Image (cartoon, rainbow, N blue to C red):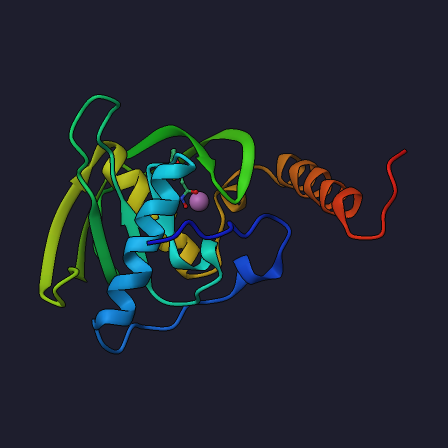
Length: 176
Ligand code: GNR
Ligand code: NI
C-alpha cells in the first residue's frame, strides 16, 4: 500500500471525466487500497480516484468517527438512480481544495447502484452525510467540484487564491 500525492486546484486533471472501470482485478484493488490509505492519511471521509490522478470511476468513503473501527466503503462505476426532492445543506470541504469550506445544498437522500470491491452489483439508499459525500465524490468522477455549487463570486475568489498559491510554489520561483 502507498500514500499517493493529491491533485490540487487549479490542476486541470480535476476537470477530466473519469472512464468506467472495465474489470475489478488486482490492479484495481491495489488502487483502491492506495486510495483508502491516502484518504486516512489526509485525513478525509471520501476520495475519488481522479484526486490521485487516476481517471477511473472509483471512489472510497469512510464515515467512521475517531475511536470507531474503520468502515471503508468502495464504490465502482456508481450511478445515482434517484434523488430526493428534499434538500439538505452541509458545510463541505475537499482534499483537492485544502482549507476551504462552504455550505452546499444537495438532495438529502440518493439511491445509488455500484459495484463493490468484489465486482458484485450493489444498491444503497443513502441519507445524511453519506448522501452528501456520495454526491460530492460522484461529482469528481464527472469533473465537477463542490465550488461549482456555490456562488460565482465565491468560486472565482477561491480559484484565484489557488492559482496564486500554485504560481508561488512553481519551480524556479524565488521567495519574496
Ligand atoms: O474529507 C472530506 N470531507 C467532506 C465533508 C463534507 C462533504 C464532503 C466531504 S468529501 C472530503 C474529501 C474529498 O475531497 N473527497 O473528494
Ligand atoms: Ni473532494
